[in-house]
Length: 327
Ligand code: BGC
Image (cartoon, rainbow, N blue to C red; front, side, top):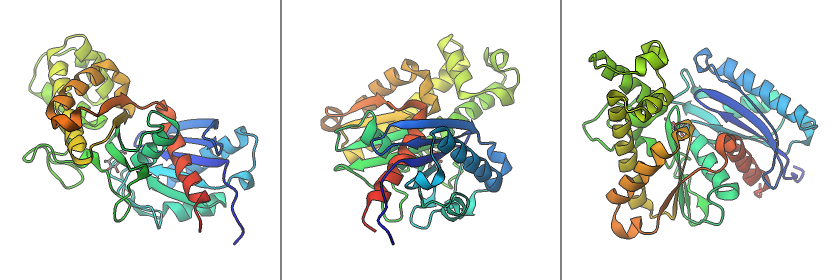
C-alpha cells in the first residue's frame, strides 16, 4: 500500500433536509461548496446517487480530478458504525437501515471514504477551524432536523466504544416525557429538534388556541421551527409558549452535558440557531442557572462559527484526520 498524501479532501454532508459537498484543502480552506435538497423520503439509494453527483460537481468546480482527492469524509446522522462505514439506523433519514455507505461511496468515487456521525464530525471541524480553536474540552451540539452532539475531551474527539458517543439529543431530560423515535422517552430531541418544535406547535393548534402561526405558514403541515420563532418574536402566545419550552428543554440538556463533561465551551450550531439571540440569550441564562456552579463558572455557550459549511468542513476534518493517520 503506497503512502497517502493528505489533502485536498472531499467533504460530504448528509443532513435530514439538505445535502452538501465541498473540496477542502489540508489547512481547512473550502475550495468549492455545493448544496442540494436531500429529499430524504426517496430513500438511501437515490439520496446517495445525488450526493455522489454533488461530490463530483464540487471536485470539478475546484478545478481538480477525483484522483487528486486524498480521501472522502462523510458526515451522517447516527447511529452508525464508523469502522465499517455502515449506517445502522439514521433516525432522521427514513429507510436508512444497515446502509453500507462507505463501500457504496468508494465504489462510486474510487477514493477511500470515512464515515462519521454528523455532530462528531462538526465537533472536529469547529475544534480545528471554528469556534473551538485552541480549546481542549468542548461540546458541540447541533439543533437541526434532529439534535446531535460531539465531544472533544482533552483535545481529542471522544467516539466511545463503537463510535456513537455524544448523543446529546437523546439525553432523557423528562423521564416520563414525549416518546422519541430512538426508543427512549423525554429526549431533548423529542421536544427541541426543528421537526419537533414544529410538531409541538401543530399539536397546540389542534386545541384551537388562536395563533398567527397558521397565517404565517398557510397550512399546519407547513409550520416550521423558523415560523414558530418568528411568531414568538411577534408575541404570539402559542408560539411563545412552544419556544419557551424548547429553550427550557435545551437548557436542561446543555446543563446536564456541562455537569457530565465540565467543558470550557459549548458550541451550538444547526438550522434552529438561525433564530439568533431569541435562542442564545435565554438558553445561556437558563443553562448556566441549572448547571453546578463551579462547572457553570468556566463554561461559555457560543454559536458555531463555520455556519452552514460546518457539515462539509467537519466531514473534511474527519478525512484529513484519518488519511494522515498511520495505517
Ligand atoms: C441522531 C444523531 C444525529 C442528530 C443530528 C439524531 O437524531 O441520533 O446521531 O447527530 O440526529 O443529525
